[in-house]
Amino acid sequence: MRSRYPSSSTLAYSFGPGPWTPAIKAIIIANIVVFIATSVIRALEVPLWLNPQDVLHGQVWRLVTYMFVHAGVFHILFNMLTLWMFGVELERMWGSRYFLKFYFITGIAAALTTILVSLIPMAMFEQLYYSRTVGASGAVVAVLLAYAMYFPNRPILMYFIFPIPAKYFVAIMGAISLMSGGNVAHATHIGGALAGYFYLKGGRIHLLSEIKYRYLKWRINRMRRKFDVYSGGRADDVNRRVH
Image (cartoon, rainbow, N blue to C red; front, side, top):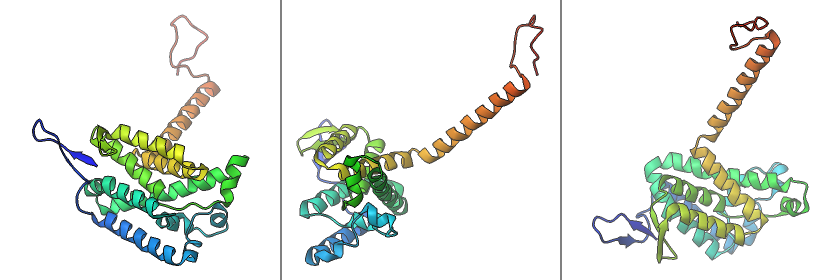
């Protein structure tokens, strides 16, 4: 539940952000359809869930399809409710195309994080290589993080009772997720959150700029040492050559 900004000294609260937006509506309907189908015919979910071993053997579609498979009613209900409550306003602000791009990029990044973690040569991580991951949680966590980044002080009703700023709400939800999930959930959630943060912050651009800056700085220092170039010196220092 989210509070609306008050027009007077009295706070007024309403449930949710309002009607569905096009992308949110499409995502939720697709998830419900897949959930019903896989609940009726359980074998349908086998080629859809995320399994690092299968992906690395060429079944790359699993990087996307796992986001539409859920483990139970409460799993899909929590994910879709969270997506609606916090994603609608982002879609209105970004537009449907950008929102869909953000949603699927962060969801895929969450899956790739799970796969990378499963390749770490430690027993606690190696078991992930044969595990299965389902659900839209990676992308949903990214949506939550994006909401907190854009509206950090927007009041959210925690447990429908206590109003707290969005940035603290997301931090609490993240902590609950980490404490309640297994190793797979940890990797997926963290991967989604990191992908969302760097995507919105332009992390790739900043990283490439930093690498380019460091490389040019190294080249300049190398040239200075090679040609004995000094940026300045004392007037009486006859041994220095200033170029």
